[in-house]
Length: 522
Image 1 (cartoon, rainbow, N blue to C red):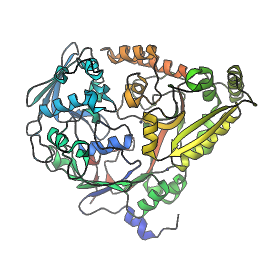
Image 2 (cartoon, rainbow, N blue to C red):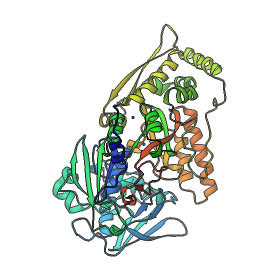
Image 3 (cartoon, one colour):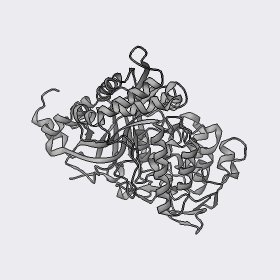
């Protein structure tokens, strides 16, 4: 949904050298909990999945939807029937033919309550989705998906969904190899077991160290894949990652507060920066605790965070302060903003104190809360600054750091009070971020937010066939979320990276570039 020693010149040369056999060493900022496409929520894991699998619709190097396993598709005039025409000759990595039946199996598995998928809502508009996901309909064949022949897959919807072309690029709806899953059960994603259909196949996975994938010669577009092998190298420690980049052990890395100055000065010819589709924010658990019950507390927390000071004095990574949720890089959208955006900080603090006092808190009775976050020094420093800002409005906040997998699990199970995170978008559409606040968004609804008014606006916008009306309704929906203060938006992210000069077709505006589109200059 979002961190040295002196070096010899020889190491600087190694960082930019081309690799024999086109081997890509890319950073993996978080250890995946699973490589099952239907059991993942974190951005880094989704990025790995795009190496291993391909959907009906794919994303190009810039993140735009393009034909994937389906070479074309048709949409009925009423928007209720989508017919996909699969490429002939598709194969799984083990040589088995890949047909529409594999998609049929995957879609049914996704909505099967027994699967307990992290987010089955990509199929929400499909006929009988609601009945099956709720358990009322036990017959999975009643799902509105059919495979009339090996090369045709047809989706029947109860209402239009223009965003379906984006949703079908998500891992949740990748095809799955049924025989492998039935043979190995939960271990089907292990090296030696996994059968996939993407540009690469899994060869090794050493937890907390690396994931290695090799080119899939049976991939339909294998001739266009230049990188022969990809090493996803654990890089949660950004200072260590910088040392590895300098030593030629990583082909790029993100620069955070602890090392961005070094990146800019010592590696200026390899340093790049660009805005990305990401918003950094604090999320508030809306399922329990005083913050979930009293909007005055949530508004006070928002008012008292001086985003400009935080970004200019503490973070210092060129981000823009955020008073909304949809990033400005998104096309054809004018986001609403929080009402206090232009209010002087002194007035904001005074109002925040009034709200806290009205809620029963003050110097002698501060609000005690805990902020959870995945371990990273730059995140800790930002939180220390935010907590100091909150202290002036009678809030005593403690910090609880943990490994990313533990943190992700705590978010998904709503076992936290306030969490620190980045909401990462995969494609250029405003639904991408707002989708996370639907009451039925599953694990992706980190806050547990449930507002019928938002659900209605999002639903009507999402099912409208009129682009202007769709945009207007989504803007209204975002305003509802902002006015409920269920998050504390902090910044619109700018990604600072050092990239090997030998790496080609690297799009800085894409958070997780796909390995299949990259190559090394000879």
